[in-house]
Image (cartoon, rainbow, N blue to C red; front, side, top):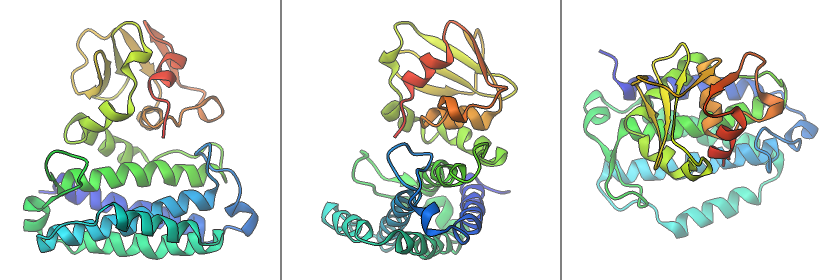
Amino acid sequence: MTSVADRTIDALRSIHHELAAAVSGLSDEQLIARSGASEWSVAQVLSHLGSGAEISLATLRAAMAATTGPGNDFNQEVWARWNALSPRGQASGFLAADERLVEALEVLTAEERQSLHVELGFLPSPIPIAAYTGMRLNEAAQHSWDVRVSLDPVATIAADTATLLAEHFATSLSFLLGFTGKADALDHPAVIDIHGSDFALVIAATVSLSTSTSEPTATFTGQLEAAIRLLAGRLTTPYTPTDVEVTGNVTLDDLRRVFPGY
C-alpha cells in the first residue's frame, strides 16, 4: 500500500521535473522578472527553493545519523551564499540542490519512511517523514507556481498535488495553518465548504482544514488547487480563475485577509 510519505516524495519528483522544464529555457530577462511571489523575482524564488533544499538535506542527514541538525549559523551561511549568486547561478544551483534532496528522499527505505523522525528546532518535537516531506511539498508547489505563473498567467498547481496538500493540512500539517492563517481577520467564525472536495476551511479561534463539512456557513466554488493557493496568499485578483466564487457569511476578500501569504 502506498503511504502518504511515498505519495509526497513522488509529488516532489514531479514538481522537480516540472520546474526543471520551465527553468531550463528561461532567459536572463525572465529570471529577473517579477514572480508570483510579490516581492521576489523568479531567480529569488529559485534561490529560496535551492537554499531550502540544501538546509532540508542537511537536516534529513542529521536525522538519519541521529545527530544534532544544522543550526541558525549554518542556515545564515547558506542563505548568504545563495543570495550572493547571480540570477543564472541561483537557477542552476536550484536544479542541482533540489535534485540532491529529492534523490535522498527517494532512496529512503520503506522502514525509514515509516519510522524516521526529523527535528526542526522550531517545533516542540520531531516530526515524521510524511509531515517533513509535506512541508517541503507545500513550499515546492507554491513556489513552482510562483515561477510558472510569470510565464503563464493561468498556471495552476496540479490537481493531485493539491489534493495531497489538503490531506496534509487536514492532518499532520494542521499546525502550519495556525501559523500562517490570521483568524482574527474575521470578526465572526466561518465554516467554508470547498465545493466538490472532501474539505472545508474552519475559521474560529484559529484556522484549520477539516474533512467534515457539516453545517457550513459559506461555500468556496472552484478547483481545490485554487483553494490551496489561497492558503498561501496566491489567489490574488490577477490570478483568480473565473470560476472561483465565495458565497455565504464571508467573501473572497475576507479570505484573502485571513491568508495574506508569505
